[in-house]
Image (tube, rainbow, N blue to C red; front, side):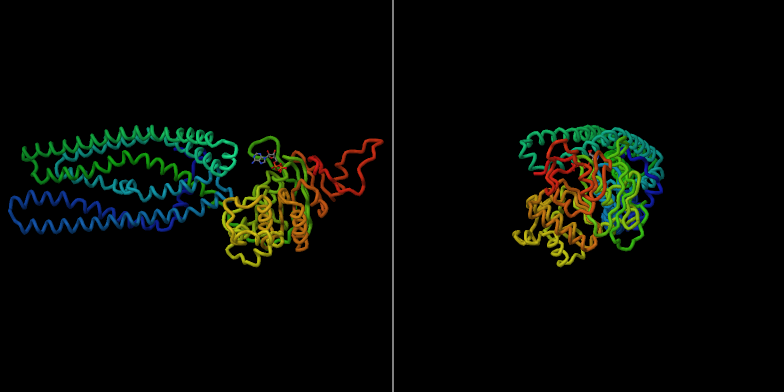
Length: 588
Ligand SMILES: Nc1ncnc2c1ncn2[C@@H]1O[C@H](COP(=O)(O)OP(=O)(O)OP(=O)(O)O)[C@@H](O)[C@H]1O
């Protein structure tokens, strides 16, 4: 079965997952209702036997009326039980999704779930939910009653039983064949569908770039070609399954005719009464119909099995994670100890042996050329990645020992691309903090010098900013991102090029916001390519090719990195601020 090469899931893990599902005891009721529905299905064949063999021979109208009332009553009960069973199944399916969706989502957000297509795990969960409330599941639940029907057929006459057994065997073989045929195609289609979805996400997300660069037709062509790739195995599998399904229908009809012919012959031989002829043909139809349904249900079954494997793979790492003890609020002592980071099995580390410390009220500015590893270092300090070796500590506790949500309350992180949540300005600042007070939101906006800008927006703090803040300018987005980073009681502020889109006024505002954060006792680490922040920094960390070239007071680091003056040249003027950061272009 296709499982994104994630390896087998231990049966104990699957049991653990199933044990979490609420309402699983409803399954007992579902089975009870199924037993009742299937037993009540026997009413029609027995009614036929009684009518043909007793009423017609005795001519008793009272018996006929009595039998009819009983049969209709039993069928009414059967319909009611069937309804209850389906309702329970659909509620169980909703409970199933409701229970597992938060786990899967947590895996996607925290990166606990393996694989690069985590957003599809929720889609797979939804597929499973609709499978659970589908007719395929009721057919599967009904399947164990087939032996009962076959036994009754044997009881009516052994030949009826033999015909039913042959039918079940042939249809079962056809079902298995369709499963084998569909298996490879479904795996292929599933992989291609993931690729198509990823491409579609990219095109929709960057639709303005696609439009501006004149790539619309190209994007459509690329999408259609991948979509065709995803559809063709589905079409191939469907065509083969339809062929087998049609053959199965023919086999069933032929066997039903055979049963009637055999019954008629047995009546002529006086081996059975005519009532049993009718009863046996009804019972054979009841036996073979679900089997025929299972032939086309194999594909749904294979897809559900694939979805279950993916859901288990996504949920297990989250369930296996130990609960973390909540630590006291930190004061903001950040220690980076011999940190090395490499991705996958790559030889060259992105960061190698980085060590420094940042105390409360200190500001460290990280500089270095493009690709030096500055953003990666910030991601590690925000706890988004774990060092390959070495440790990063906040108040002496390694970051991975903090509860991620608790740690997040004390870390204000602004990535290079601001990434604002869709919603209002206030929501973009407070995020998913349900207890956020308006005063705290406004205070953060004021600290980031974004308050005036927000008030100038059409609906102030209630202005909808659109997906990723698309209705705001780059500078406005950056100021909102800053306000979000300062929102709440942050003890560690991590900003990745916060002044990239800021004008000189914005940069001054950023400096005063950082001074306020310093005054509050927050430790700050800021990546920048511009020199303004160096004037308020306590220390500078210079990175190059993932290595720590220098760390110390700004003037020392910059002095050691300046090119030696050419003998005889006048040298740089003494009273001018540094205009070139080591390893970087000249700052205008
Ligand atoms: N997810 C990733 N997979 C593979 N390589 C990565 C990944 N993230 C970063 N890198 C590599 O790590 C190196 C450092 O990247 P990083 O973004 O940290 O640099 P940077 O110093 O912040 O650069 P810039 O100043 O341009 O933002 C780069 O060579 C980059 O290609």
